[in-house]
Length: 507
Image (cartoon, rainbow, N blue to C red; front, top):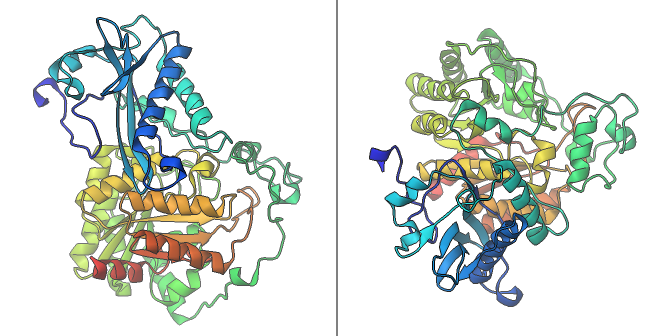
């Protein structure tokens, strides 16, 4: 394949060799697949049949008749005629009743690629596309139609997450994945929809919540008292002040301060801090996050060395390095992360290093830079359940985050992710997300209660009790996740060193 400019990749799904490239729509439905007659092992045959029917229905909407061939998975044009030809290939995998992989529908790819392989191992039948069949349909039109039909089939109540990623044949091809410019402009002191809970929240954010089915909820009022378990005693003692002095002296930012973490006293008095590199300004504006979203400055080439010096001065045993999203940089900031890991290892060889990264827009080369630095823990936060992704973090997506974590696990790394709850999700949706994280091999998960940073951010839909967090911890660890840190005040880096040590002992 390399001779033709292609790459051969082995995957863990059903089917034989196939081709993926520009002009092809690849869809990965992530679902809980029921068992036969509602129980037992997932009914793979029924699920594959459902995926085929989805494509058949889409093609019918586009004016193209299609069907099945017994014993040959996929969707076919003229299946019973003299010249059957496949227009959509299907290859799936089920893990703990959760679906992975999916289908590839040929919209208008370069059909020459199929002549270089025996597609799906079937040598006596042809391959076709919408374009080859005379259907002039734009990719975005087909994507919208597939998404609508999939929602009708698998999400009849309207609760689903859609994550579009365009083929990277040019820099601009990634832009369709971004679903907005963040929270948007505030709507004033009176707010809408949520009464005083929405004081300052933007129309755009509230609209996305409504689309996700949260609009009719009765949220926590903006000025309501927090429950006792959400109250934190601040202790600005000697160690706290020394930690702050070190960070100021070296001109370093921490997510502890920039994101308004409630555990700052506990962690700083314990001599730990989560370093935030690549500046204090993020190119994304998530609905829950306090980090500054003004135009970022150019990265500081000396920042990795200063972080390493701080780690040495503080005599840390476990260093956590997080980053703002830097979609303005070619590599998304990946090299700065790798350089920081290397600098810490150079100055403090015995320290374990955890990196908390953005999705880096799913860019393979950027992710490989970070993976190649071999952090002891690779952390990427999925943040919320599938249904709320668009409202909570409009420039990211559930499927992409799972993909980043799966690729990190394939690279041999210990993986970690985090959930913030209290923004409108259900108990079962959190369990579903734990199952999804387990299915891609995540080793450590943290779950904490959302705290609204300002009146312009997403409202708090509810306070989850400590008992529920205990239950999520039990459920997640019974699934096989190595360590679940779940409590109202838990955050992504909370007790990070302890969690890493526990998981490494179990390996």
